[in-house]
Every structure is written in structure tokens, then in C-alpha cells.
Image (cartoon, rainbow, N blue to C red; front, side, top):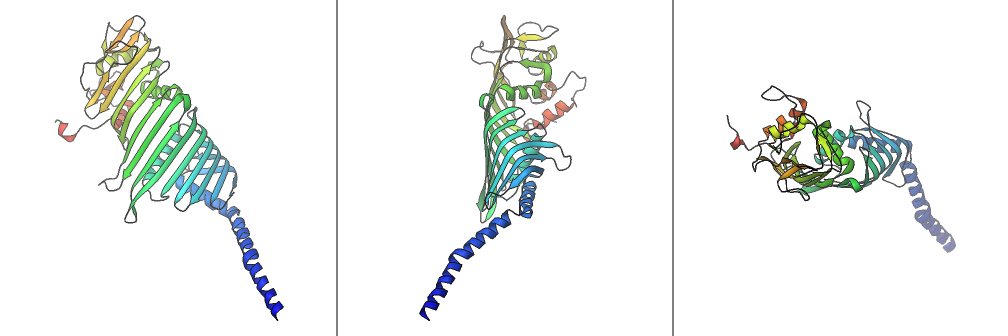
Length: 362
């Protein structure tokens, strides 16, 4: 009787300590690797990002960890490819979502989607925290060595009162960008407030120059340094920084607009054709008061913004805060309209700071 009881106890101990845990681990592993489970995780990721994702292979190396290889991220409605990715790994730990991306290539249409997904994540409650690491990727053909995004939530009385997102991107020789976005729900009308600093060179600065001036300005070695760029929603509230370029040329139309609307002072009468230069350098401040430019960059004469090998071409404007309406006119080709209605002018007006209500005149 004693041996029989001891044998039975050993059987129960073996069952409880070995068979049941092994069976449970096996069941969980099988469940996480079921095609339906992987499909459900892919659906959750698509819902979070608001896109359609297709991948050559999917797997779940560990519970709550999901991996996609050779994935394509596309717009749901148009099917247009936004980003192609070598590998995506997600890991959910409670209310913290970790995303690791390697070998991503973002196309130009992805810019609008990235802005919208940032706004969407800032205005929702879940996940409470997101950490995303991106490595060995490209944005507009610019190599991005490392990018890190961290989204956190501030809670009061059990509910989210504000969301904060920080972004740090290192593009090597093309520069770096650091960004912080905050959305405070205690505001009467919640809006996203963004502060950005960084230095853009190479392809990044060339891309910015192309967007601002098109083919009217072509220059080598453009370097744009942002000490602070602040904006709310899509409207800039303040921008402070410097710009330096190497040799290049500008069209006579751009030179005329610089003189007429930015009040830059040509040293000699402007020629009819393109104007060659060896150096451009200036410091700028843009806020609700207007635009102020200084020509105080190293290697240039004091007060000079554009110079050639024969001497100064453009001097800085008089020390005034240029009214913002002049920038809308500056962005517009020659027109007889008192208020230019071109796409460039409308876009410029939509982005510029707003003057305080007290400064408006009838």
C-alpha cells in the first residue's frame, strides 16, 4: 500500500511538473505559429499604420513577436507603393510596442503618409508607448544610417492627457534631424506642436532647395542649419537658422524677385541673363513679425549675402522685418494680380506664421 501511494504521487508530480508545462508551451507555440494568428497580427499592424502590407514571408519567432521579410507597404485605396522593407519585427510587451525596421526604402508619396500616421498616433491612446528603430535605410535616395522614434503618453487620473513623440535621424554626410512633437489634450482645440533642429547637406539640402526655388537656383554644397523650426499643425510659428552654398547661378527672374520682394540690394544693375556667384550665405529669422535676413556668414564681407569672384552681388536688406505677404508674392512668377493665386503662393500662405489679431488692419 505504501509503495503504491508513493508511485501514484510520483506520477502526479511528473504529470504536473513535466507533462503539463511541456504541453502548455507546445500549445502556445503552435497557436502563435498558426496561419490565422499570423494573419491577425498582420491585420493589427495594418490597422495601426493605416496601410496595406504584403510580405514574402511572415513568422513568429517568439510569443508576441512578429516578423515580416521583404515587405511592401502600399496605400489602401490606390495601391501605390509607399515603402519597401527588407525586414520588420514587432514585439508587444503590455502597452509598449517595439518596432525594428531594416533595409527600408521610402518613396516620395510616403511623405504625406508618414505625416498623417504621426498625427494619428499622437491623437490616439493605444499603444501607450511606441519605440521604433530604423537602420540601413533610404529616404528619397538619401541613406539613413539610424532613425529612432519614441512615442510616450502622459496620464492623469487614469486617462491620457498628452502624447509626446521624439525623433532622431542620422543621415551621415547628408546631416541629421532631431524633432519633438507634443499634442496636449488640455488645449481647447488640441493641436500638434513641433520643434525641429538639424543640419541638412548633400542630397537633403538639394531637395529642399529644389522645392523652394525649382530650377531658378542651382548651387554646389548647400548647407542648411536649423537652430529651431517650430510649427503648429502645418503652419510655421518660428524659424531660425543659417544657409550657406558654394558656387552656382540664379535666373534673372529669381534675382528680380529677390530685389523686389525680399528687398535685397544689388550692388550693380541686374543683367538680363543668369547671374553666376561663388558664395551665398545668410542668417534668417522668420516669425509672426516677418522675415529678417543678415549677411554675417564666415568668409563673406559683412552685410553681403551673395558674392562672386569679382565682388559682392547682393547686399542684405535694410534692417527691417519684411512683411509676410511679400513672401507669397516672392513665391509667384510675374503676375498682374494684386493677390497672386498660384499654387506656390497659396501653399506659401498656408505655411507662413499668422500675425496676432491686434496687428490686422482693415
